[in-house]
Length: 230
Figure (tube, helix red, strand yellow):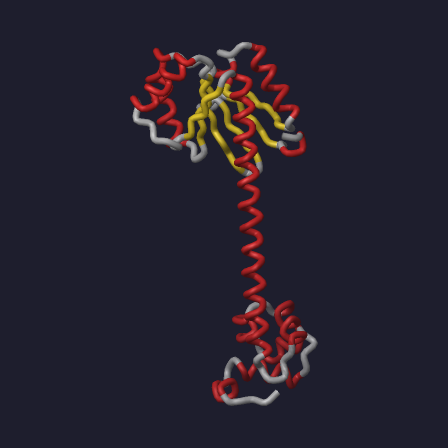
């Protein structure tokens, strides 16, 4: 990950920080800075919350798996997954014995695959790198969703404008220039339909004849239902 791709905020739990070795905290601070993340120490319920690209992602980070504390770990996870839409649990499991212990506990406490997602790693440094990459990926997905939404809204706006132009240019003598002038000066079809001839003349460059045609089109059924030759 390049520095320009980060630009987020990492909130680290103060209670979690105080239980870790200072060398690990220094590594995390350096890694975050290298990836353009700002680090804040706060009293938060997860171990980490990342805000990146409009996405908020929470993490539980177990750097020392202890089977004697498994009940507390899974109870906490169950509580946090109800509070955070995007929650990941990163667990450091350097030995085969710890892996076996974790696997037994996972099913013992009725965890559902992917709810939340557990990420086993070999060491704390690898675990934190995984955390940052997951947060970054979530941010990218969020930004892509925003871009897609904007594109869809633009497409809808274009379609609406096309329909607007088709309605107005169906009025005899009204061309695209006239329709655009009406859109800019008056607005919607509903507003144009309610506008008086005088209002149209005062706010557009349309001729008196065209203003009269528009006025009649929206008020006289015999006019807009009868066949016309432009």
